[in-house]
Length: 251
View 1 (spheres, rainbow, N blue to C red):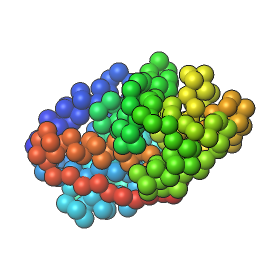
View 2 (spheres, one colour):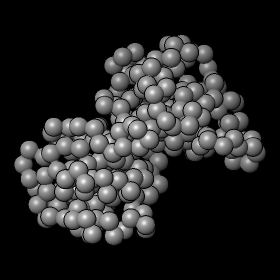
View 3 (cartoon, helix red, strand yellow):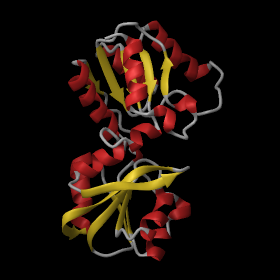
View 4 (tube, helix red, strand yellow):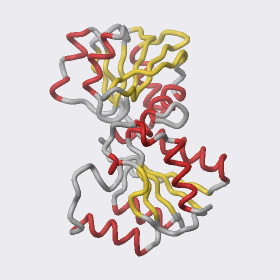
């Protein structure tokens, strides 16, 4: 498949233009080979990730966290090494940040909601006028401990539990990554439990003071869902070979 055709499809499918993300965070960040036969997907674009993409023969690497985060960086040190490696190995780098959190088919949040068995999914978790997360209900209420264990089995990461709400739960909101601030919105929406990636010190007391449970399943692991689903979509849509690169950070 031609690289430019794939990039155009990704830009449209992920609806990059509609997000308030800084434009540098999304889209084609490094141009590689014109023909793409294999795509590697990963959460982060470290040099190790790029080396693994080359090892598996990828022509394009798609990551959730890309090379750029708004302000331009001088092409020196580790940043230079990353760019140089991609160019030397003719590997394109494509990044999708908030668009891959929010997407209803291949997004981190909707995908995770379906994986753990939520029903009645609806948008949740506002940021700059967009909803990034999802909320839903479990068909059968379960204990908070059973839910944490279920998420651990699904993602393969230990879950930190801040039990500020009921022991039996049924209404869950999800915003992957670093979204501890959304605990307040989850409580206001009448949810009994909120799931995100990592805790924040300035939001430690929110679940206990607002009567809601907070579950933290790892920034990295909660954001493996979207890139895996996107890889599945590329195989189904275009017959491309894909490979997920697992490089957990423990955070």
